[in-house]
Amino acid sequence: MGVRNPIEVYAILRRKRRSHLSTSTWKCFRSYRIKRTSYLPSAENEAARMCGIWALFGSDECLSVQCLSAMKIAHRGPDAFRFENVNGFTNCCFGFHRLAIVDQLYGMQPLRVKKFPYLWLCYNGEIYNYKQLQKHFGFEYQTLVDGEVILHLYSKHGIEQTASLLDGVFAFILLDTANRKVFLGRDSYGVRPLFKLLTDDGFLAVCSEAKGLINLKHSMTSSPKIDPFPPGHYEVFDLKPSGKVASVELTKFRNFKDKPQHAEFDSLGKLQEGLDRETVKRNICLLFENAVRKRLMAHRRIGCLLSGGLDSSLVAATLLKLMKENNLPYSLQTFAIGMEDSPDLQAARKVANHIGSEHYEIIFDAEEGIQAVDEVIFTLETYDITTVRASVGMYLISKYIRKKTESVVIFSGEGSDELTQGYIYFHKAPSPEEAAEDSERLLRELYLFDVLRADRTTAAHGLELRVPFLDHRFTSYYLSLPPELRMPKNGVEKYLLREAFETSNLLPKDILWRPKEAFSDGLTSIKKSWFSFLQDHIEQQVDDLMLEKSAKKFPFNPPKTKEGYFYRQIFEKYYPGRADWLTHYWMPRWIHATDPSARTLTHYKSDA
Image (cartoon, rainbow, N blue to C red; front, side):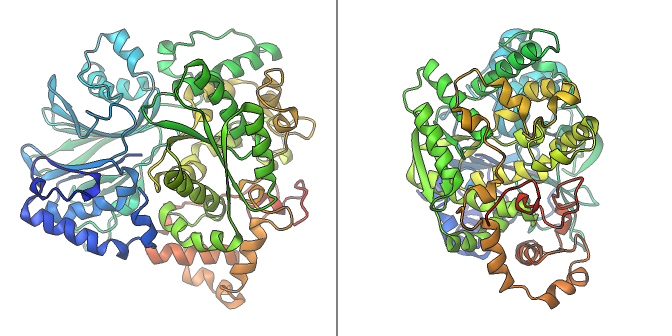
């Protein structure tokens, strides 16, 4: 017996409203609650809860059994969830876990409106220009949900224009039953995650995280491939009467170097033209402030991660300034994590005092960090060394924010290092042109590394991440500048960005010009880095012989270090045979390096 149409269960069954469920489905959910610890590495995660989307098209198995897989992403939406069958297609189903940020009353999904009864939308993200598009095209919205604009745009302009006109971060599943089409789409940088599974016979499954797909029942004798959906693309599928699908086209709708089509609807208007340094600096400041301003859209409390580095400090200072201008009825909460005497804690404290935020410091020790590694790898769905290493602090701080504060919408500085050439190895770039090319490569790969880290570690605890440095209009302008302007200068990375804000008084001068600190190192003691603590622990877990045989045990992406081996073992425990989710390890360029840590680079000055 399949899931009834619709099934809504609020607060993750905490109220146990059994009347919403059929008998067979209730048994499945009851089973889910009993078995949950079998696929979560720690019972603590039961208390930890961003939105999660999930959909099946053409399932041959009972939907009331398949829907258990959707519960693996329950952490992304703690406020409510719903399963709903598609009228006329009994083997097609949507699942949605909701974190209510906008329109808390009418924001459940799949989103449907009376004007378009044949359209079904499940999406995760924020569309910042939905009001401007409404005004320009004369759309009549039936909800306050920003994503409703997708339905109106699609009906008026089709899928390509829809994707191109959206200013925001998003992953969506759009079903058109009148024309029998299914559409998937994802934002330019993959800030919002999306995975798909497609079998040989046309069974399509889609989910925010891969863990919601790995145990689905299907007719193939071997495990079907699960792929991250490529950022900046949409895919079109034909929906057959059987509910199965056939892929028609996969199209790249946006090049992040090009000026976005939606810029004409931006309230900022046109920028002053010219490449003289003063004009460029002024435009950078205007665009960055605009990027932060549009991301204030929320009905839940806003907070900000603050490491005391340039990027998070600029975000926090600009955010607080705009919150005051908009008369938000609460103070900005900022959050820093580190060990006793960590450089990040000291720098973040200085920034918080300067801007006047309500500041929290989270202290952790090496043992707590090491114990979290297992949970972190399960959460991330990757074994990339630098991603895992840097995720521990972000995971622990997100856990604290969810349990101890009211902040739910969390701003962060992700994307700046890739865009503004902030990594220390950029000092070794052979030419401005090669540095520019590598900056673009890093941006293309964000969804595999830093954006993945930031999304999973926050969403694991029911928080929603906002990253103004990856605003499309801001990034396209910065990338349009001559390569020589974007290079490190006078031994300082991100020189242009720092110089642009030098007269703003947003930050203390020593913070504005603070050298790059690797996140996973800056949060630990100046006496001994997180990198060093990890190596000491792993040395006891992985011996030389194990590493020597690593290529035989792990033929794809074989680990070259004991740390890599240690992470890979944990990954294979949760996701056996899925190593191809990571195409390659993150590593610095133009130098000989076997480890991604900035601590191993000669440019980096360290006592550890």
